[in-house]
Image 1: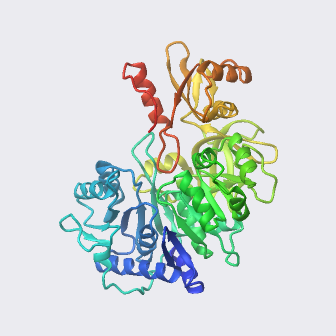
Image 2: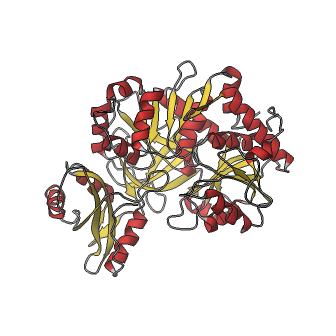
Length: 533
């Protein structure tokens, strides 16, 4: 049998009594988790789900996500995890675009009424025939006509199930892009993609069944990073996943201490948050005594943050790179070699990488900037029902990523920026990441994001949004002078706006397009300033 669900089933056979997932006081063993996934599989097949059917899932980091995910796979269906921040019309779009036949949705909270948005989206997607609502209190009646709660739907369902075999190249998961430049597209990832990527992660991070790891899972499981690095890789070796539905730095540090966390994967903003709340109440020695691996991905990690984390926690963050279209693990720091500050590392086992120009020609000169292209067991089948979009980014097994990088003489890659984020000021190419690195080296800067804004003289001008370190009072002139002293004249920012927070996605990426919109509105009289969001 070849099915991604075997990663859970194998651990459930070997380690049935071990803790698989933890949420607060709730703990589920591997046997319990597998049994609940079997109930979901039985429920779906009883409702007519066939192998290859699509089942959409909107759920935060709670146990139901994990057993719904594997239950869908066991039934031979395709999991379509959706961003929990989507609104009604966006949910309807994703259900229609993926051809989802069933929609499993968490009820949410007063602040984020996912169930309400989900039901409105479900009603507006006539091709999706069935909806199931996940509720916190396990009640048996949903507030929507024709919708069962998950507790009601699985009531009486057997806790055993014969997992339906799939072919290695059958689609297991459809992961949607964020849609920053176009309507979101669904990357089709196969059972082989996902299984191989989980094993590549275990090989890279030295995850083993004979050494028990405890993961703090704050990365959203609907995102490829948390899904592969924490859930699939972790459960395949019998690790315990301590779920954090929403990242909060204070809660995260307390959980590090209470649960003896050995493995943490986060976005750069997660590490920034941890460093920003450290005080005398945190037992850093205790955390450092158990933490084995710290991993960062999703976007480039500022060099300053790398050194600060190692100094405070005694652990070197392993920085890497990937995207939904590559399952996601693709390039990572080699744990067996001395890390190079600012580098995302080298291609992981089984993956090839090269730099290309716009015409797919290889950029071979050391230090020259090109777009990263990848080939290997991790590359998607293509975008679901989008042959033209697939052809734009795939050729001969290679996928182009849209990310610009350079490579040193030893083959280590260094992210320069997103091709779409590059600023062209007076004919010169300016990469925001480079300016952000300089700003973050200033002792008064806690977080920074740089964008290009329209300018009548230079085409684009450079604007920075800065969150100050606590109890500092650097001015705009101070920071501009700092950058000007360290950078060529065409690179330093001419405009700096201070903020108490920067807008971020659910996975922790800074929303530069929102900053650009706010900058535009402020320029045209909208009067919006960034004071926290």
